[in-house]
Image (cartoon, rainbow, N blue to C red):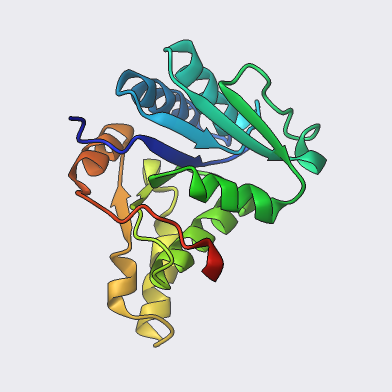
Length: 195
């Protein structure tokens, strides 16, 4: 029996960013998921880090589920050569379907959309709508300013210290897989009536 979840959702940039390390990490993640028999759910685009992770997973025999809003299909160049591609009507529908189809969340470097997806998943976990692992890959220290802000939010009394423990912070792709293997059993049901 596998130690890993069956399906993970990857949140990451629709751009490559300025560091080739981030693109390489996205590709390594896609390959690693495929090699471990873990299905990849993501935003459905063919560009940036998201495109790299999906392409690597497909190239190594993995299953990839893309979910993209109709209005973004052209801008993010919806990737057609996937196991499944779902074109939905809104960002809300996209995020809900991504969450429902996943047993865990992985966050790579990205922009505002990545932050939106991560914070919604984190908030839903804080509110106990789900108990799925959320792994933040702080590759090359990309997320350190965000982690400092989260600590400030706690220090100023707007969140509790235990809320920070809802995120698992790792520095590399290898550590993502170690974290996935050690997350243990989680309640992966998603209480859609609450969201």
